Length: 318
Image (tube, rainbow, N blue to C red; front, side, top):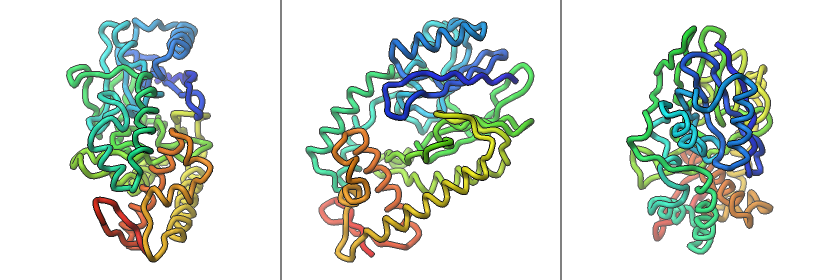
């Protein structure tokens, strides 16, 4: 099975996104890049360099539905005519924009985020949502854990690896323990556990960090020899990355717990203390809030802090 990494430019601070061409029947793209003219032109050019045209693609498989990964999926499908889009049912970014739903407002209110700040973040993500074409529920096929994606000379098994998003998926070629992991595993940065509505109880939030740690352990159980991430270089030393992630999460947990006072703190106020340089920039502000909520949830689940609710807002205490 020939896996070809293709680097696609994005307008985001994270830099280029990696799209993967599986050059084998049926021709498959894992992820698609953002919906920009530059990204589309780059993808077409690099596909041609590998003897493939957009119209030849038969499957577009999404690791998750963030704009830099799914933005071009509909455009590719339309140009290819017969291409099928696959995404896990717990993803929502291909259906509607981040922070666009009423339950997002409820989740942010629980975190203590001021209404004006929430509106500012909404406006930012309304613009970002233009970098992807939304799909109707009849325009994609659901991925599920354990599913086999068959190719002419092998298969990729779908692993549901939630954490970065609820429906994040990875793909393993068990014959040589090669994995494609989207933003679940990245070489140079620790993935952000994005705050999301819970896919089962939509008015609650998804407990992202605990799920992410389970996903990391599951990937580790395959003893990967090669890991392709959504950004940056391939990983040949997964064990080192795993241990670095666990250390970083443990250190952040200790920092978070140390900042929780006896008289209580909201996730919003913690984010301002934890990330003072990021809190006034809208995209980074949302990531700072996400990280703070994830660590507070995890610390509370481990009984290291407590939580009380007053007027619909959660206050965490030692």
